[in-house]
Length: 147
Image (tube, rainbow, N blue to C red; front, side, top):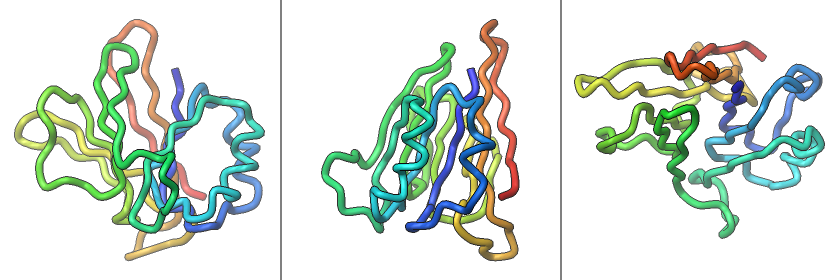
């Protein structure tokens, strides 16, 4: 399973990206969409999409966080990272900081941020990520891709 993970579109979807995402099985957006019309082109891919609300989002149908299980792994999605990981999760996925992240904390929880898709920020180029979960449940990989 290949999951496209994006964050911080802030009303901007750079040209040519959607064509690079056709192989996604699912799409997770980690907040700060701003205007839902920004998602229309992504929705045309007809892939299941999960969106969590960011601090710049005002859409009551988007939850502040989600717990998802894929391939036996437990993922927590939210926009602003918590100071500590939740118990029982394998990975905490967040946006907000606009800088890609792949770190493991002292409890063995992996912290992942795809970066900001709409602009370069704090020296980090605009980016998104692929979360790949093999069918055999052997682990998952995280790959940052530049816009």
